Length: 90
Image (cartoon, rainbow, N blue to C red):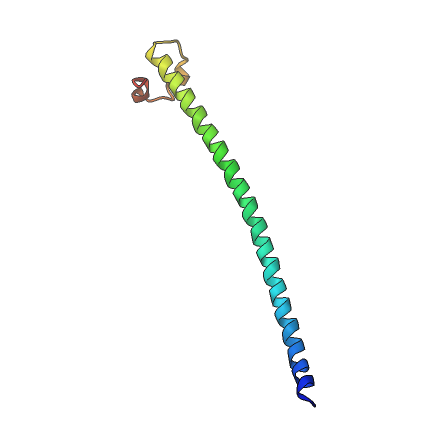
């Protein structure tokens, strides 16, 4: 057996093995990129929803506090949700 044929017998399986390992890493990398993009979109949506919820809560609290300070008529069931400390803030 010549040196060239011996190297091709050893080199061919090594090349196939290394090529398949590289292909697997490429697939895993692509999957992680897709998963990362999906998670980023979910995080952005969650932050937007949270920001809107906080803004709505602040608006409602401010309006109710203003109404309580102005002695406006409010149902007793609604007043019971707010402690006396929130009634004194404006």
